[in-house]
Length: 257
Image 1: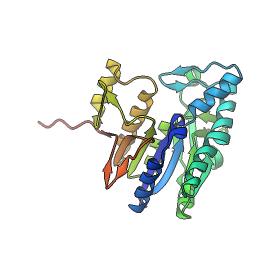
Image 2 (image 1 turned 180 degrees about the vertical axis):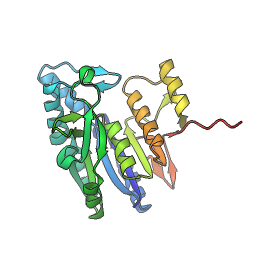
Image 3 (image 1 turned 90 degrees about the vertical axis):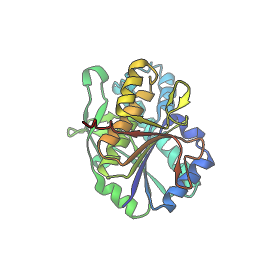
Image 4 (image 1 turned 60 degrees about the vertical axis):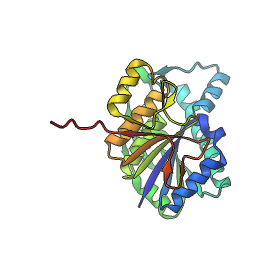
C-alpha cells in the first residue's frame, strides 16, 4: 500500500483552492492512498476568546490546562474535523472523521506536564483501524487528540501527529500543508533544506514561531524513514505532471573522509 500522509493546518482550511484538490486527484491517480491529519489553531483561539481564556504558547506548542483541553477537543473534533471532511466530500473524496483518542488510535503520554499541561506526544499509532478504513476506500481524517494508558486525553501538535502516523504506516510521503508556498529564507523560497540548515536558520531567527514545529516535524518524519517530506501550499497546485512545488526536507549528509 502506498500511503501519503497530509497534514492541513487550521489556518489554511478556509483557503484551500480547487487547484489543491486537483493535486490530490493526481496523487490518487498515481496510486497513493491518502490519510489526513488536521490542526485547528484559529478556531480554538476564537472559542478561547469567547470564554475569555488567553492562549499561551511555549516554543510554538499550545499550553493546555483542563479548560483549554475541553475547548480544543470540542473545536477540533466537532468543528474543524467536520469542516475538512465536508470539503473533501464536496470534491468527491470519500472522507471519514476520526478522533485520535477513539479506540486508542493515538496512544500518547505527557510531553511535559509541568510546563505544558495536557499536551502529549505519540507513544504508538494503532494502524489496524486506519488500514481497515483505507482498505474500504475511505480517507481517514484524524483529529490530533491522543489518549494515555490511564485514559487521560491530551492535545498533540498536529505536525507531530502527522510525522508519527507517516512513520507507523510506512508512508512514502508526508506533506505539511500551509497557507504559504514553503519555508522562506531571506524572502526566497527554499526548495530544499537539510537538518543542519534548519537548525542554523532557527538559531538565526530566519525560521521562527509556528514554523519551528513544522520544520522539526518534517525532519522528524525524515529521520523516522519517510521517503519524502515537504511543506506545500494549500492555495495552489502543489503536484502536477509528477513535479512537486514546495520545500523538501532531507537528512544531514554523511561526511566522507
